[in-house]
Length: 247
Image (cartoon, one colour):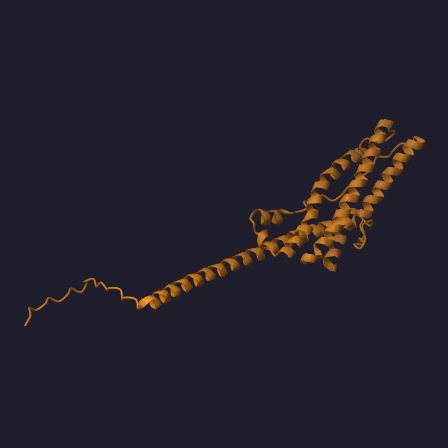
């Protein structure tokens, strides 16, 4: 009989020797399993990544449509007040012509006014700077780019319009018998103001058309609400615009 062996302690560490591979077939089989596992993990990671980007794109598109909706509300309101603006400019022109041709004194006018609006594009700029726009399908991205072209135009043109309006509105204080130089200055301001009126209202109309392909349109109820608001602010001269024609 051999000598008795001592029992192993309970916490003894057992070292298992790796089983030898069963030839090259077994080796390649295990490699294949590893490769498939890695591919599945990468595919799962890509799916998760795609879902995350899809969620972000959905949120960003919602924010952009909300922003564009505010812009077209402002654009429609502006177009409803166009008849009021034209009537006021015609009144000023008639007074200046009478001053030039007959020496008639010019009565002080009430201020010529146009709506001042922010013409928003922050969400679009954020989407581009954060590279979210690159994950929007190209066809939709093109439509958003076209829609957002007009708020930029309106924002930049509005600054010139405000300056021309300020020059023209000196007639609220400096009226009476005008000196030729002052009258010429006012004629110049009148021409500039008319030009800016056409540019701003034309861009507003084009923006209303450009937002429709991305699903941003005004309902009839929204149009009526904007018209009602304009009539409260400007009077009965405000009217629903014909959107099939450019101003």
